[in-house]
Length: 227
Image (cartoon, rainbow, N blue to C red; front, side):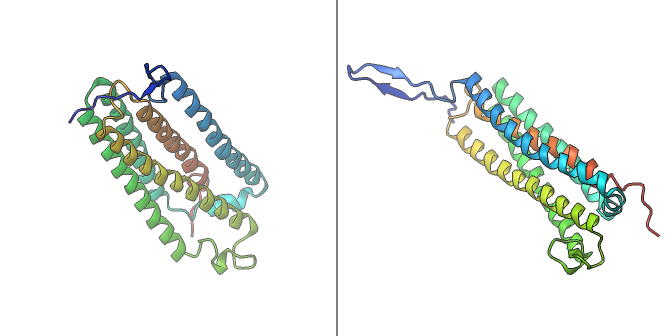
């Protein structure tokens, strides 16, 4: 299968053909535009982390107690899975740049598989949380239901931030499937791979956010021993 990039051609009133400078050909512009988008993501999650830190100072003991109830094993497994997925995504981009299109596609598929594993582990963790009575909407998570206000606040932020992060994982899977389609059609190639670069950059942000989520939520109460 040919992976030759076919540029778009425009014809002026005099019948002369001109190559249209699209985003695939504008490498620097494509990177700059995506970096600006990434800035908005950083601002959104950064505000959430700042809020989490602020309330941690107000409900220190409650946050530590609530954190100790989370499953650090499953959280740790997901951390390893996501770090490996960042590796496979990076290797895929390197292979694309070197001209190994088949190898790049294999790495993208491995990244999709690892992303699906991450979602599966997170779904199991949330299921366990539900059965343990610490899921949003349960009576135990309401005022007077047995949890302190600080604990309810902690779990509310936990489900909000991990849920939003999971949504970004799903978006990432969709983007990678789209990338594979573009590669198969020859619209992404070693000479025109800005889309691959930007999706890899997006995936780096996804795993970087989790690197902060894991210690903030799971490790805060690591020293608590339940009797």
